[in-house]
Image (cartoon, rainbow, N blue to C red; front, side):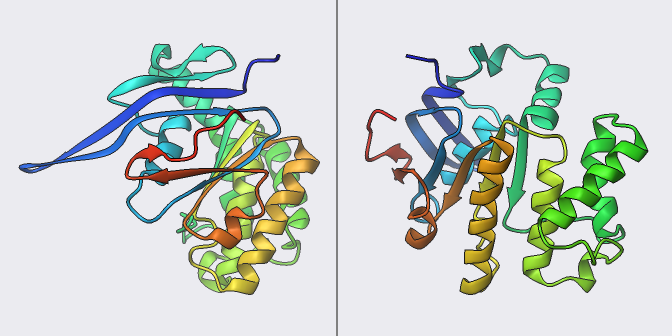
Length: 229
């Protein structure tokens, strides 16, 4: 049996807020295979976003380990962790996080330029991706000139420009109306197959989670439906 793309064992995460200690994750185990489409589902505050941030290397656990391609992230230097985040993982957030002063094309190119991709190659790839997400005619528009759904499409193109193996999406439909939300999920599903990626979505919405091949339910910082992936 092949090893999982990513596995997490015994993850705990605690935040200290003044005199208050908030225990968000309390010993979470998950395995994600290459090519999976997994939904992390649960109510607000159950640890979905925290878990997503940990497996994407945006934060570190208080205890436990995260293994990607057989390598423990805790053993990565800061430089290697930055490389992991930039090359192996793509991130899509609820709030888009586009730079308002940049055009759609410039926003998508930015991640590739950080990875030191040549300017011409980055622009060609960005134009291709913007066309793939239906925004070929919006490349010169800034975020304020785009609808919420269009901004999320730009964010998806940006997440894909370095051709990551793992795409992490945190409530990607949370700021969108239901029709646009469905369009975004269908787009992510198509791109996952097209780009041969692994997709993990954090969502509180059962309708979004229903599109996934597997659902991991988090309740009070624990996986409530442990099963073999």
